[in-house]
Image: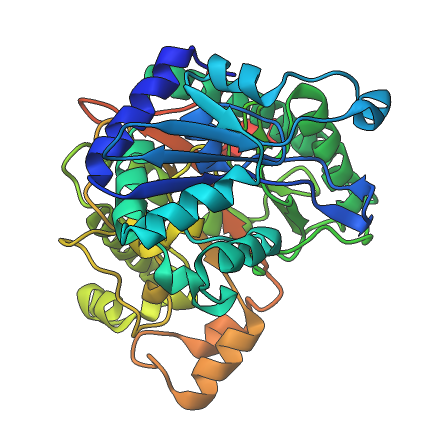
Length: 461
């Protein structure tokens, strides 16, 4: 457990008060077989379960009776056969005591607790499930088919969890800083390995080894690619080629599953070409603009579009865009170059709480997502910032051949784009710079004691 038992007791008390009534069901994860039952993937606990209970063992669930204040930790104790293979572990009763839960019992007790609540006409609050074993069990418990469970999940519970987990405590920030320290080692290693002839796959494998050796694992599958224009480009066996760029988007999870997430773009030859330098400097300035704007009370939506305006202005200087900047942004012409949002919340999940519904995590009643425009529909975050939020700052410029061809063929945003010049950039790839920001009382700051180089002279050095 990362924190003392009083921390978890207090977190559950706040949750109980926010939900108000009914039964809260928090489900932990089970082992997940890789290719047959006893050969499993490395275990990763559900983040919300971990936030409120702090327990890493598989096969657990928690029930909180909101009105009565009763709390149960449910799970089956292991038998001697398991002990022979995996060693002795704490009993469920011992784990309940560690996290301040008064009652414990075998998993079959879950059926009794849920059935009784439903018979009494009480609400059973659960979060959207994402693993099929729990979908099946929820169907057995509630009669709700897996295809309907996401819609049936408790909006009251979702909003209560998002409100709590969004604002990071000092202890959580310290753990994210530890993840950032691992990320620093990952990215600076990738930069040093970035040379002609080295494969993307080799670098990706080294990054996974660093993450596993220093913490738990990578916080998401590492993106290491010469095709930076592909948003989620997996490392391939291809050797890096002189004159191109390598985009590396990677992060680590600590043993307590707090994450880092950074992106750097490195010239494979060791020096940026003039064309690469021109595009990189735009992304660099957009990254730094966000850093200067982010502060409590500022809408991330506004930060995103201020960055887009700067990007359009600078691309106009290179002749890649034209026309009125504000009209171009309103039309979504900038999405030719940056079809994603400026950033997302981060914490125990690299896209923090995304499984609960991005509309509840990144938006609120004041700022709603816009789904009718390419690029804008991919924003993960728009809400007003609060002290204690952790967000990523990740502008990018990409030259996507298929997107250039499609918009050219349809004439989409033709009044703002120089298609003949765009044709000459089809082999460019993409550039992204990403850092993790903590929103502070006065503004924001980088997370991570050591800064991964991102200025041109520092990268080349």
